[in-house]
Image (cartoon, rainbow, N blue to C red; front, side, top):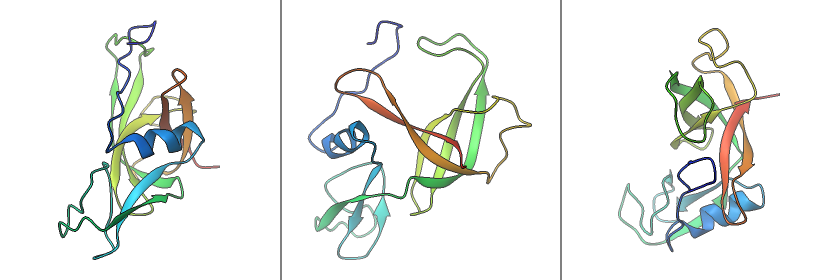
Length: 135
């Protein structure tokens, strides 16, 4: 847990590549060599075909706002209001993240708005991918 009460993710052997990438400013996904599926969250096999012939790839970091909710309740490590969002990456997978760099209002957060990844360093081990409006 961070000093402000925020829960810090714990990398596992299956997710270490993701956290290592975030630490150097890369959003990493996995791709199946058997069927071509690009997927998230990290796992050692393809969720589409079950193949273990998978590779780690650097994602573009670009996507669109698929869905969101604006939280107005006090939450450790966050200043309300803040957006909890589902981002659909250009590569296809969807992931949950926060939207930063814009007002946290329905007027500013539009479904399908273009987004790009940005990174927030929490400590020496964990850097979180988050998303902001694309420039």
